[in-house]
Length: 117
Image (cartoon, rainbow, N blue to C red):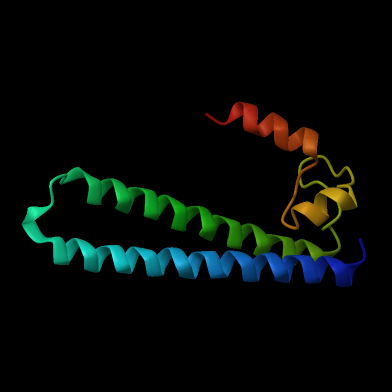
């Protein structure tokens, strides 16, 4: 993948994630208004708390994704975008096309997933 294509993929993913984040925050604000309008007649008092926790997790996940995209921009600028931050092995173009923030090879990422509990 050439540097221009990499910039395009990172920018497109950043735009997509930013829009998702904007929608998630907007939905949370809408939920706050709905909860306030419902008042004390809400049959399940735990439901708003559960929704807030889920919304917070979604927002945090999207923020983490934006941080990963920023790191991808940094790696692109310093010429290390195409190599794993762990091993230095090349990251295939196909992987970077699917996930422009990828910083590990598929095998390395899978190993990390199995150890994160």
